[in-house]
Length: 197
Length: 127
Image 1 (cartoon, each protein chain N blue to C red):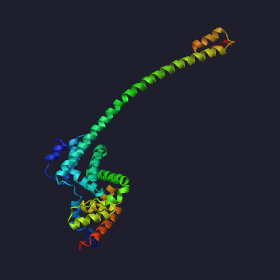
Image 2 (tube, helix red, strand yellow):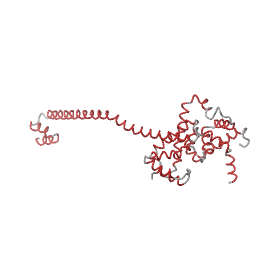
Image 3 (tube, rainbow over the protein chains, first blue to last red):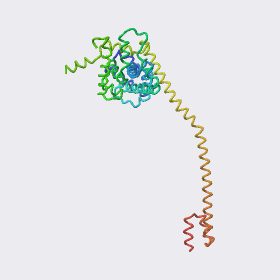
Image 4 (spheres, rainbow over the protein chains, first blue to last red):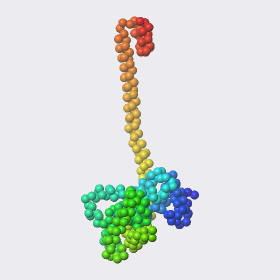
């Protein structure tokens, strides 16, 4: 039974269960041997989180998708450099976050003269009627790129400070500090619509 | 410890705010989106793999003609160099003979046939 078949016939599993880790190990080994169906299975396992990581860093959905795709492509090409025993997800998310950071850098250079316009676009939905979501979008816009990435990765996606630091290429302490400031800003900006924030 | 934990908990944004953020950052299209994304990723990987193979092969094909031309040019250059070199050797030998005007005919002729070293030895012996 090949690695892909082993995973498909396995019972429903979460990403952190040990049997899943064993299967992931088999998939990684098979993918390193050039088995594209094994890599497709790894894509299926990790694409949601990979997208979420990218979405925390870039501004638009389109850029997040591009970053996720680029990240998986880079990971596929670098599979021979992945050391078995490392957590595959952490390795992959670092690659995806690098792809997302590259996109942010490219956008900065390209959109330098349209910065004020583009900054107002990302979280604004003309059809949005819910005040919390609308104000939340505005509040997120006021954060720095790094603060927004940190708060989304930590509070929404559940990554730890150290993992976030590795993904964004910053010290763990900086990630903590960014999270603290991001939360304080969000709380202040949402205070008038939420008494409990 | 308890106070620290409480402070961390107090720092967290309320669940509905986090939920709204999660909704806001979710991709459009619901669960069907992930099948599409997986297909696009794998298409990119297959395309990339084909492109890498093709680029390797086409690069080799592209180099075939210049490599043949370069090889032919090298052969020509090497032949020309060999011709020139033997020409130069002949000239050196001739000038050696000319330079040894006072020596006997046998001693001046034989070095050309025997080479520099033998000619020198032979010249010294005849003295």
